[in-house]
Amino acid sequence: MGRIFNRSYPLRFPVEETSLLSLKIGDPVAISGEIYVARDAAHQRMLAALQENRALPFPLENGLIYYMGPTPAPPGFVIGSCGPTTSSRMDKFTIPLLARGLRATMGKGRRSPAIASACRKYRAVYLATYGGCGAYLNRFVRECVLLAYPELGPEAIYRLKVREFPAIVVIDVTGRDFYAEREKRYNDSQRP
Amino acid sequence: MKEISLLEVTDKVADLLVSINQRLPARVERLLSRARNQETVVLARHYLEVILKNLKVSRRLHLPLCQDTGMVTVLAECGQEIRFRADPAGSLTGAINEGVAIATRQGYLRSSVVEPLSHINTGNNTPAVVHFSLVPGDRLKLTVMAKGFGSENASSLAMLTPASGWPGIEDFVLETVRKTGPNACPPLFLGIGIGGTSEQACFLAKVALTEIAIGRQPDHGLRKLEQQLKERINQSGIGAGGFGGPHTALDVRIKTYPTHIAGLPVAVAVSCWAHRVGQIEL
Image (cartoon, rainbow over all chains, first blue to last red; front, side, top):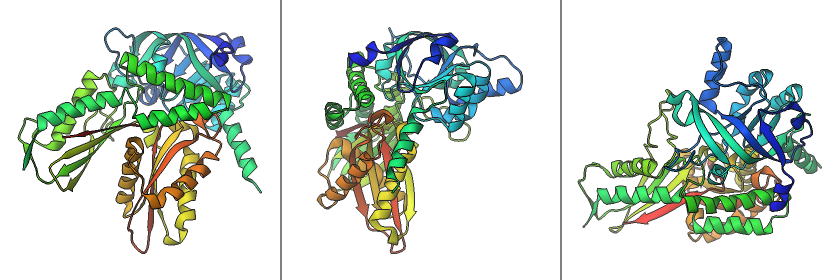
């Protein structure tokens, strides 16, 4: 399926606003630049920091958070297996981050309708990458730096340098949601 | 009377756990590549292509194929004529856990197991969940499953009423699949446990899942119901990666057990496409 990759939209993070505006649900993207890794426990800490007006471990502005907890890097590797975790667990943490300038989140699976609305409001996108394909995705990561909360182990915050890391647009800046639209079409088709 | 060394159990479990994290059972891989060949929805086919590439990269680089190397479940069928040689591990459970700890270190697995309330990481994926059964003979058979929680979180139990019957069971399974949708990394494998008590139904569902991977001959009387259920699930429109198409579930296996006149327990054990199971015999 080289075909689909030829059509991939290049995205560089930190991102320029205009490059997100033309993305539509179902579009494949190829992400380069610097992105940040955080999952459940790191989100809890970040939200606590925001509530207490403390600085976050990384700049949110125009950034991307990848929901992921890698396996340890074997010798000779920058990172281990590094596929996405289920994004919906982060729904309750995401909106305050979008409000402070975060422009993209990436994981796997659905988001709540509130996230789709917030994506429209803050002109952000939600991307899904390939669930279970952590070994394949390893090849797109060029650097991995432990940034904060090392005591959380696999749940710490990392900064990644990635090159053409592949993903699919699930929620676009207009708030359209690929999965929600698919499910609605299915439910409509089941009605007598 | 046969003696089995617990050290040998530890070594075998460690090797097996590393290898199932890098290589899927032949049957699982066959079903995935068949799905890829038949898939016509562009994004779903693309995802299936990436899945098969991932399996190659994992094997070539000896990286775990998924970063969620899971929590380990072991089904231990213990021949009742076996005597275990007293080794440092102390017990068969201890020997299995030692194997899990070694695999975590040597196979660069993620430490994903924590105390449930304090969230303190045990640091080596122990303890495994071990189920024992005593069987005739002098063989020890261990079925080892490494299961990620993206799909484990989708597993579900319902205590239906006897009047719900098969239609009630079908509806519950479909509701479970629809609720998780793209989250549990479809194409899925589903083990269904029907009957017994609440915990027995859950156990049967897990055993059914392992049998899918190993390819044991299914209970003939249930094959038609399994097919029927799979067809309904695959009409749900979820598809591979949630991108649509007919590959929501690649296999469904049912196991039953007699139950009480007043109940109908049904458990659904959900596995993602990365269904990691292996077996050793000593």
